[in-house]
Amino acid sequence: MNNRSSRLVSRRRFLLASASIAVSSLPFVRPSRAATGNELRIVAAPAKALLIDRDRPRTAVWAYDGTIPGPTLRLKQGEAVRIVVENRLDEDTTVHWHGIRLPNAMDGVPGLTQAPIKPGETFTYEFTPPDAGTFWYHPHANSLEQLGRGLAGALIIEEREPIVVDREMLWVVTDWRLTSGGQIASGFGNRMEAAMSGRIGNTVTLNGVVPEDQPVRAGERIRLRLVNASLARIMALRFEGHRPVVIATDGQPCDPHEPVGGRLLLGPAMRTDVVLDMVGEPGRRYRIIDDFYEGLAYWLTHLAYTDDPPLRSDPPDAPLRLPANPLPEPDLSSAQRHELKLEGGMMSGMGMMGGGMMQGMGGMMGHGRAVWTINGNSMTGDGHAGMPPLVTLAQGQNHVITLRNDTAWWHPMHLHGFSYRVLARNGAPVPHNQWADTVLMAPRDSVDIAFVADNPGDWMLHCHVTDHQTAGLMTVLRVGGGRSKT
Ligand code: C2O
Ligand code: CU
Ligand code: CU
Image (cartoon, rainbow, N blue to C red; front, side, top):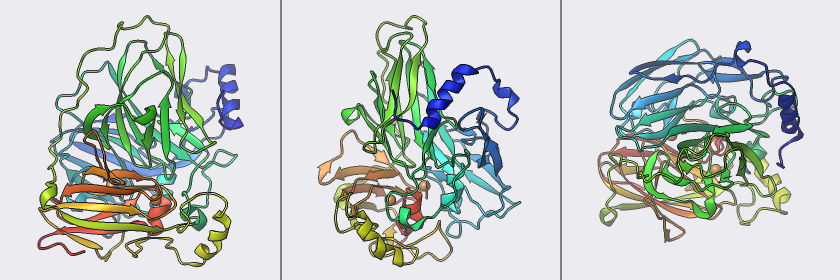
């Protein structure tokens, strides 16, 4: 039995009653199509999507090419691409290619790296993805609402020589706050939520639908690419009866390893590639459980085994290690050191969740829009012209940044334009040679990251809980010539 809302329970009954409605009879719903080639076009526009029940009204969303999630863009490592983005929304937008190391002018931050794309206009992004891996794309203008209404898609950069698996699955997992009528709840930018865990919703979709089952065959080896495209929901996924092996974090290969406790921690914007050997029994179903929030565990979907006999008797021998990406390895002995301290939010002095919550609120609400700071500064919104850099990092040099979470909340901290090595957490070395562009910090965590500042420009660093970003947990790091200034 699961802990989902009665809405989802009634949906399952409904499906049992009438599984026969053809998807093709639903005019606005198309399966996400895979786009390939060196010249692509995507259109951001309002659309309707079937997120939950077939007997419920479709949800008004904002979408790329009319689909939730947007089309999966599959590009080739090291091959130049042009992506024309057309804005058919009623407001400005941009597209940010999250995790891709690209020229600053292609980074999609309005004001900072480009003029926003006005309604009716287009912008052509051109870059050559240097790294293979699992990435994603999303707007960087009015992000809270544009992402929260559905604008997001997966961006897969294919290896020249991928590892051998039987097949690949992609799960773009998205949290929505829906009304009882199945529409997206208003109230984006609620300041109280911004000072706490952000806008966490009530419905989680997998590739745009509330998913019952994922059919699999016994003995298969599957590469699963997981993308958390949520505004605020952190996930901890467990695979009943299975042992996922992590082979990449945020697109970047790591030493293949099983996650601690078998739980995959995935904050907003984070990606994990895992290899899953289907060691279950034909005909059985195994739950995939998200139990990150205490008392709010639910099952996301099931691995539903067909009755087919196992494809093979034992898992294959083939190696799991992905080919390395051409990332410059930071030299720690010569690295310049910096510290970024995150402060603010509710109960910042207390270091615990629980009873004191309501008392802290009054004072916090009185302040302006900013409820978070980085080294005492708050940048709010999504990016705008004239944002002064908090730190200038000498170009070509090695840098170690200590991120210190002096708040009572979790933060997935994202840096644009770079993948960084995650060196240490609370003084302990982080194993398995992990790189990231978004690192999840627990309350009071301190994390050391390192990278070579080889890509000049003004780069955003922000929390990817979108309410936190827009309420001050954001800054700009400048990579430029000359000496570092902190
Ligand atoms: Cu995916 Cu500035 O973010
Ligand atoms: Cu980014
Ligand atoms: Cu945060």
